[in-house]
Every structure is written in structure tokens, then in C-alpha cells.
Length: 211
Image (cartoon, rainbow, N blue to C red; front, side, top):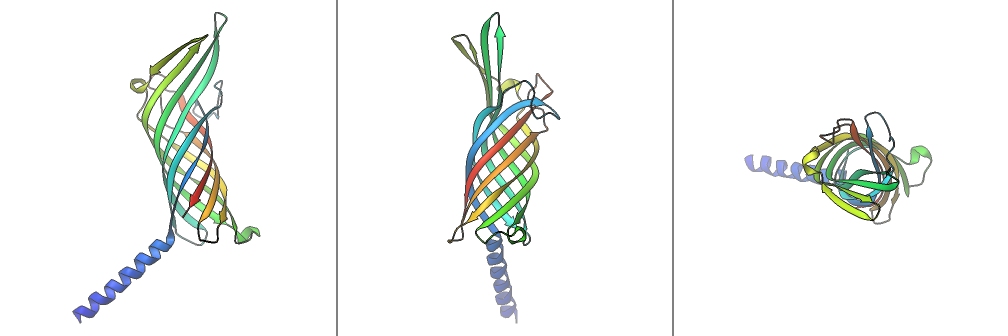
């Protein structure tokens, strides 16, 4: 009797493991960040939109026919760029903040509901993110003179906020998929110890491959 119980428990565990594997998808992504820093509640202020990059991986767990949870580990650049004129000389400052970020997103996936074929899906997602600062520096150009400044001691080590976005998925015949996404990252946490008003703001455009 004990042996049968162990056997059936093993079968149930194996089936549960296979079911979980069927519900889990993973992939990689890379793309561009269009970044700036501004006060809380503003998309941007006088700073320019400054291009950066992101690269990372994601794990998606299906919890229903159209609903899933997605977490990611990304390396991404944030920051700002602004120009000034000092005594008739143009001054350009670029502030680069590099983060390891971990979002947790609730994701909806729709296809046939929108009249699409099996090849295509449309997604929408939202959720919080947490970022850990790996480096921060400023590059200033005054005329032909360039200077680099380490900002690590003046920067908060963590960043957090909310992500909103959506995308399209093209399903391949091998069960994998090509994923394109557009997202907005709204920073809510203070990032600069010397300026409590600044927050990270990023529009990200990425392409990924889901296995």
C-alpha cells in the first residue's frame, strides 16, 4: 500500500512538473531606451530625450487563457542630456545611470478575440519595477574641453517605479515567437541625493525572441 502511494505521488508530481513547464515560457530581448529625468508627475521638462540601450531576459508564467505574469532581468541605461550656454560657450552635459532592473508585470494576450490569425497576438502589460544602480557618471563638454565626473556618491543605489506598455507577438511554427514591445517606465523613487525632485523617465522599444 505504501509503495502504491509513493508511486502515485510520483506520477502526480511528474504531471504537475510537466504542466508547469508547459505554462512557463522564457526569452531574451534587446532594444533602445529614450530616456530623460524630470520632476515627479512630469513626462519630461527642459532636458533632452537621450538615447540609450537595454538588454535582458524574461520569464513568463501563464495563469489563464489570456493572462500571464512576466518577470525580467534587464541591464539598461537611464539618464539625461541637457545643453546650456555659459558666457557664449555651448555646454553639453550627459548623465548616465546604469541599472540592473527587475520588473514584475501582469500581462494580457489577445488574438482570436481581436479577429487575428494564430500567427499574431497583441499584448498589454503593467506592473512595478525595481532597479539597482551599477554605475553613474556625468560627461560635460565645454567648448572643446571634456570632463568626466563619477556620480556614484551622489546617487541613490535603488530606483523603483511603474511600467505600462504593449506589443505584438509573431508565433513561429516551431512554437517559439518574435516579440516586439513599446513601454513607458515612470520612475517614482528619488535617484539623486542632491536633487530630490528628479525621477527617471524612459520610453523603451525592444525586440525579443521567446523560446
